[in-house]
Amino acid sequence: MIEVVILGTGNVAFHLFNAFSDAENIRVIQVYNHRQESLKYFSSFTDTTTNIKNLKPAHFYLLALKDDVIPEIAEQLRSDDGIVVHTSGAVGLNALDSTTNFGVFYPLQTFSKNKAVDFAKIPVCIEANSAKNLEKIRSLASSITKDVREIDSEQRKALHVAAVFVNNFSNHLYSIGAEICTENKIDFSILKPLIAETASKIESLNPQEAQTGPALRNDQKTIETHLAFLSKKHKDIYSLLTQSIQDLHGKKL
Image (cartoon, rainbow, N blue to C red):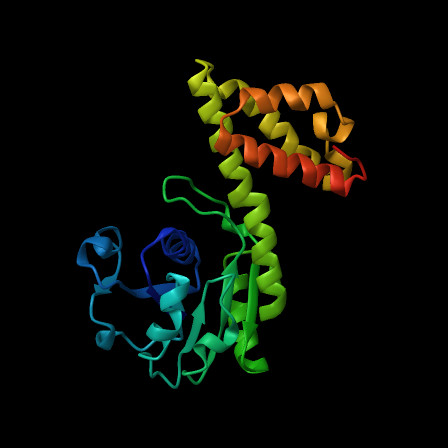
């Protein structure tokens, strides 16, 4: 049985806790957070603590924390036996080098506590400070997903930037679209089939092939009409993205 201590109670920690709990060969023996109120959900299922000095001996200490605090928390972990791993896409492996055995366990997915995910389909990117530790991390990851990738820190940094573009930025554009709909008394749900089809296209086409719209066609009058309609804050984003599309596809405004 693989025993895991999770440090953190945010979206990633929440979903990893549930995925590990469903695995037959993994037991989450403790969850840590410095705030007691954040541990309420987890305390119904396992031991919890607000004191990092009271962490139990475990095979893995999984840091699902804000990027900025990972090195600071890692310095407080002095286990020579357990492997310390973080779940960040943007933080390098060396952020954990104050510990003896360490690595990265980065699930490449967007997580919200109120939306269930199928972990078996989520890529988990792994890295470690030794071949032995890498295989142990691979074993942990393979217990919850079919897709385990060995990705180094530089590759993971690039991957995280790419993920911000395709996930975080695209979702922000959904928010702008929803705002425009609300301001004009239109139900945002009318756009959901379009959003679904746009995402579906990437299954069979590369993103450049899937591109459509007035920027690609260089429909100048339509672009000017849209810009005249938009507020200043949205106009700047529209212009920047239009220019980016046309630069990529070799067209000029």
